[in-house]
Image 1 (cartoon, each protein chain N blue to C red):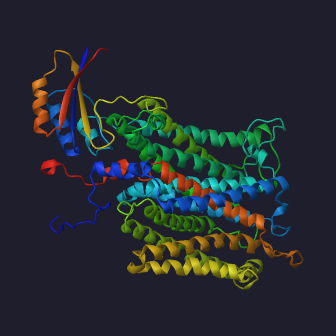
Image 2 (image 1 turned 90 degrees about the vertical axis):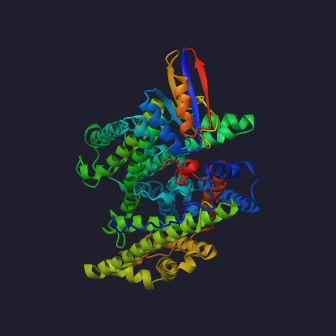
Image 3 (image 1 turned 180 degrees about the vertical axis):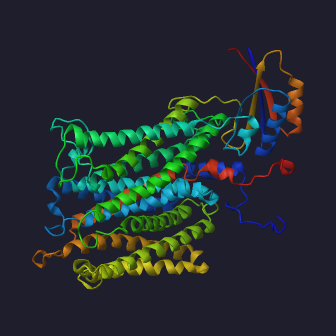
Length: 173
Length: 456
């Protein structure tokens, strides 16, 4: 049995400050839900910088190798054709396509990794804790095992940071 | 920072908006009945598209002998249209990717529609080489795949094969960038939808987006990465298109200035087209508070800059023709300015050199009607630039006995009109059925102050 404490704000500053307070008082943050990417919230929540840039580099490298080696293998190994007396391995002429495959692999690879990793996929149903997070509400969700949750403290912090609404929710695992 | 002066900046969005009104305004467009102006625009566009479909069907069934080409002028209208449309697309990526990397916050109200324009323009561009093949049902032969003809692979040393990869990658990456940027807004539409069918459609399209900040956090990283990838990509695309000409041994084409010249020209023409479209869209959709006069002004300034680069390129070409001492090269340029296609050349010079100069005046930059008219002149000028480069370089070649003239046939003109029809039909449907303004990004630049002055 898990307990969720869902608290809504109507602007980003209250959300960020409340997040800071909850974090300082030792509450466990499940997630925040916001209508746009709030600047600086990641730092307050203690999120690490995403590793997706490394993934992007990896895909770019794969694209580059496929682009270069693919053209070399096709033009110089598999079926060499004499076109205007140019060398089988026309490496400078292979650069434009190698660049395009690099960008294509990097872009698609990063996006698919993002979608797969965050579970934002076609046919998925969104998990909504409070209404209007895609409109004008900023929602913070705290979680704790039932029994250890200090509801009074959480309500007190919510009030100091001008929360407009809060409620508790129980969910069995 | 002793001398720091607090300046009051003009807000990026007018009308004292808050988060709720932004949602209501942008999503509201999709609920309301379209304006009369929208219907007029849509019907004109759809009629042009119908004409284009008839023309393309006819020329595919009959063959490209229906065009005005001859043995000397083997590339003309079709390739002009291709280069024109690819160029139009470039402004969208410039606004969405390069201005993002430079942290230009004003791009937030216009990036969605500019990106949509890119995708539609690249689709129009892609049609022309495919029609030019004569047997478009064999278009898949352009891709290197194991086949039973040898295997006979494509020739990777040819700039035309580079084009396939450049345009293909550009279309895919632009579309992905556009869609990824739209997912949060599609979720906003989903959460406001009243009817069951609308809920289902936007529920599917928004991929279950919940506004989770853990997702936003990674999403922001990926958005930056895609912008970083799209910026060099857009430069590479028109560079490769210019290689179609520059790597040949034709006087007038065989120049090393072509890549920067083409890229600047592409941005120039693209911004003119963004202006044309957005001035229509802000009027037809009543978005004057979002796409403000400031946005229009900023874009006209980009036009002054890129127009200057284009002017410099024209001068450089002439200078290099003279300085090279190459008789053929000199002839081509004299023939451009004084030969039988001089009228096209001077339309190009008039539209591309003179028109941007009007934008030095604030009175003209802030007069929407004037900007609209001038942007159309630039569109015309840039179409003629490609026509001049292609046709005048070909029609009088090394042997005077092979000289010829070129006149487009009705089929070619109908196809050009049809491509405009396709472009505007798609754009009109887009501004009606999808969030035309990036709701999330506009909200993030509202400088929204909370109750009690917020936390800061």
